[in-house]
Length: 147
Image (cartoon, rainbow, N blue to C red; front, side, top):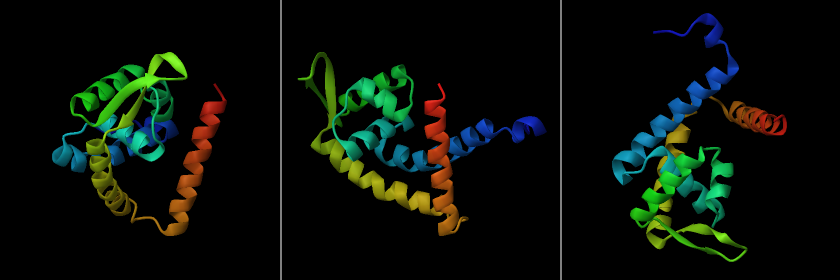
């Protein structure tokens, strides 16, 4: 079923559909090979890219619901991909970080994700890719600041 012409031109809808399509295609690769869900990979990607974070920080950085982040962290902990340790700055929260197994998995997935990114965006030339990234960053920053 096709969306109505009004919905088909609604930018938030287009962004959501494009984002989900890209995420789903990349997820196919790491789900079948590493048994990870999208939320789990997003948490791993943030931890792999920027180090330890609390669940609250992960919720903010991934823009995922705190329940989804909680479930992803629980699953990753059960799979021995992340380690939870007390946060010295805050006695109530915990810092999460990748275990050596989690780091190894992250380093195996990143090249696959980058290959898929190249494949998915090969319809765009380098200038268009740079413009798209700039536009998406601008939209995200504006959306965050206009709360």
